[in-house]
Image 1 (cartoon, rainbow, N blue to C red):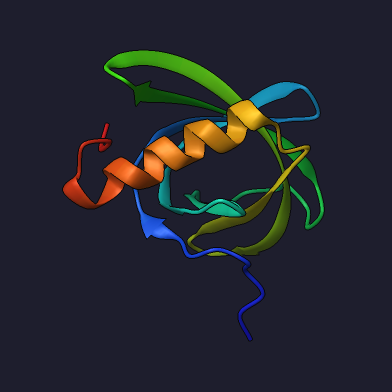
Image 2 (tube, rainbow, N blue to C red):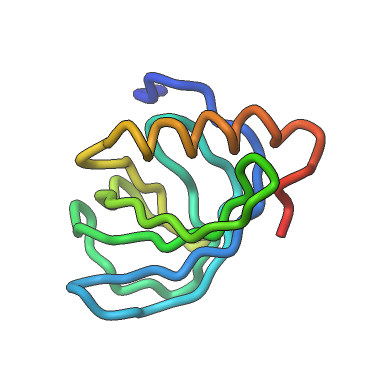
Length: 110
């Protein structure tokens, strides 16, 4: 059963994953939506409902910038982690809108 409240689109972005305030992995997104993303990551020890931070470099309006999202792990598999965004700010929303707007053309594949 699908519990997402927004559609996800295939997008490949480099992500630095933090758990308990410490960097724990570099990975890529498989897809992203306004509610969360899937991270391609093998052998993760982050538990379900673990709080994580995601450092992502995005290009908005021709300018590259780092942005940090907070999220909760909602599921894991051999292929990676599904995370749901938490403490969603207006800046988070705008960044995600830009990523989703550009994703079909492949402009944000880094």
